[in-house]
Image (cartoon, rainbow, N blue to C red; front, side, top):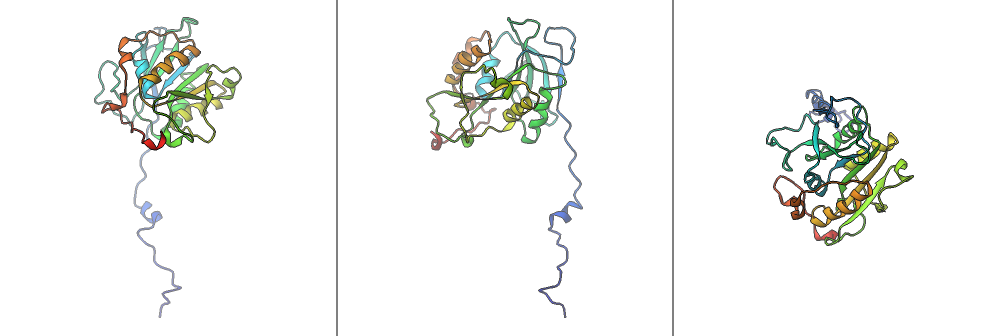
Length: 267
């Protein structure tokens, strides 16, 4: 007679290793890539492009602010194969799901204009390091990098007021030797994750001068003023802003921008 207590049970069809035997692995996603229409100076594209400053706009206020800059020129785009182009407009729009690359004028060094990458679509966590590596090596080799992101309340250790716009910074070791942003450091114990953290890490590895600026609140006109007056001035950016930028209140109310509002628990 079999001993039900000591007999080895038969394999279960619900074991994960057994299920994997019958499930084909998912095909890997194609790598993201850059597509340029022309070099920043209007000539045929020559690589690598070496901008004096590379700006990466991730936050809603920074996206709106740079969208209102009239002197920028569209020169390329970051292609994420998993992101569909359907629904995008012909002319750049804030409602597009795109990652466009622009050239901004640089009066101090006309031969090396500033590049701007505007992230208007979410980047999955597993793609962040690939995108960060793509934007800091090979085709684009920046001298300095400015990353504009938002404070995520779930990752912030202290309290924040809805009525006060604040900005904090993190920076690479190379930037710390001669910092440009006169801001307080992001509080100890707080966390920055996602694409902003991946970009800063990539710059640290390549010994690039880079600053990550995170602002609060995630939406609202006071943040625009903070970015335009302090951060632009710190990096010597002289940009003409369209008048409609002054009417910006809460971009997150737009149905195409899925940013959850923060509860009173963090105010």
